[in-house]
Amino acid sequence: MERSTILEMMDAPEIPRELLIDDLGNLRLINHYLGNYRNVLRGLARFAGEQNHFSLLDVGTGSGDVPRAIVQWARRAGLRARVSALEANRIAVAQAAEQTRRFGEISLVRGDAMTLPFRPASFDFVLASQLLHHYSEERVIVLLRQWAAVARKGIIISDLIRHPLPYYGIRLLTRVLTRNVMTLTDAPLSVRRGFTLAEWKKLFDVAEVGSCEVHWAFPFRLLALIRVGN
Image (cartoon, rainbow, N blue to C red; front, side, top):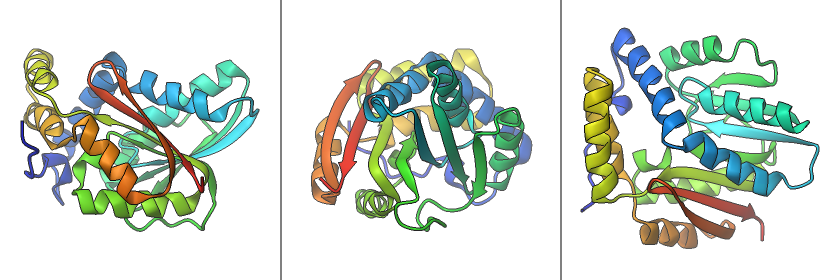
């Protein structure tokens, strides 16, 4: 299966409000039931180690569900977390504000992943969850290098692995789950825009931002842990 270069509806400059809000709700369900939260928390647990506190930047946070899951995990573990959630879309930012209003550890920032409004070494960790498959190989490398400058300790990548099984699986699942045309279009297209495990490894090697552990996670997910400056 070749990688698709077709842009997802999510990447359009203007998206009808109700369509996007419904799609974000579907994405929260998919993140929960298909293991994205579990994958992110697995990576963070490996990175945080025995620290009793950490700061994290979530790039492209969508409706803020991943930061919320992180803070809930940190509270259970007795850790102090400070999470900044960056999102460019104004409707998504409003939804994130609603989803995270009871979590004082989370700060929302409207901004672009390509031009981070933060100083170097502002956070312990930078997280990109379900984000990098939206970009070309060249831009992925640029983003990784920019994020390495902002992270003091590491970068966590949780994303999709391109393969026919998850492609046809998510097509079937979303047809059962929703009638939202955006979810029906973008969910399988996201898989086709993803990279194979070998392609992911090559991107991390070319970026040269630090030592990298690459893991396959069920179902067809990538978890990459990059220790910056090593």
